[in-house]
Figure (cartoon, rainbow, N blue to C red):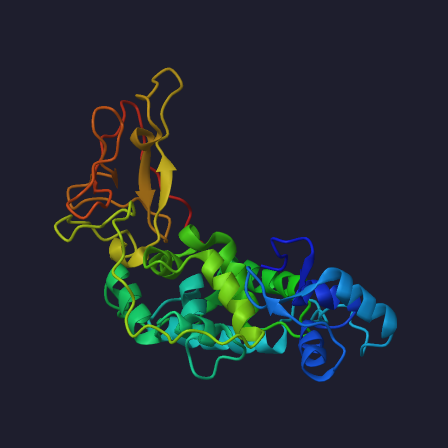
Length: 339
């Protein structure tokens, strides 16, 4: 994203570090300085300049603009102002869905709101992504919004780390402010399995690499093709599909497990002298987001269904099937302490 495939060329971020200015200042110089080297499209998005020509220009122009040492970190325990705005928008999304914590999905939905600062919304919309459809897909994956409004909305650990990582992304791009596009870049670091929304986008052909390139293109004023009017249908996926006919029992808090995705895999606790059959899928069951085992209405734990060789069984759409799994002899199904 910030380095070209040709060592003879430098990106805007690399040029900024060479000149000691921001990436935005490099673009200003490229527009206004008559002797600034000519640019060309970079393979990783944005613009690139011949390294030797830029070094010669730097030698002839020792004062290219205000010295830039990187974005200003916010005070301890605070967020950069634009990230605080994004977090507030994400809290609104979580609250509207009756969710009690701000997850990565809510950050993506917040980026698509008109009041979101920065370029993340423009990046997502350039791929044909719109808030209504993404929100509908999220609701369909979990069931209708919970019936009870939370009294407060906290920031999940994953979201907190993503907001913190945004500062690193701004440093990499040599940007003066930390804003929504840097949060989006942070999300691309775990794109396929980061959360439902990023996986949903990836399944529709919007990859992490494409998003990173588009961030650079939009923030460096590259002319983009017209956004598609509709997203493509996803190819067959190996994501587990929670079939409607799989009857699940409410957890001890009375929550529907389908509304407590994403689930995590938990290994059966079995005595050491009773080994399980080979294959990690035979050793696992799911826990919901409350930390309780996902059980059928007759009390059986649920995980990916596998055949006799330990290979996951696929449904007619190519999704891994979920179903009841056998508790190993001597094994126990336990819950985590709810946070």
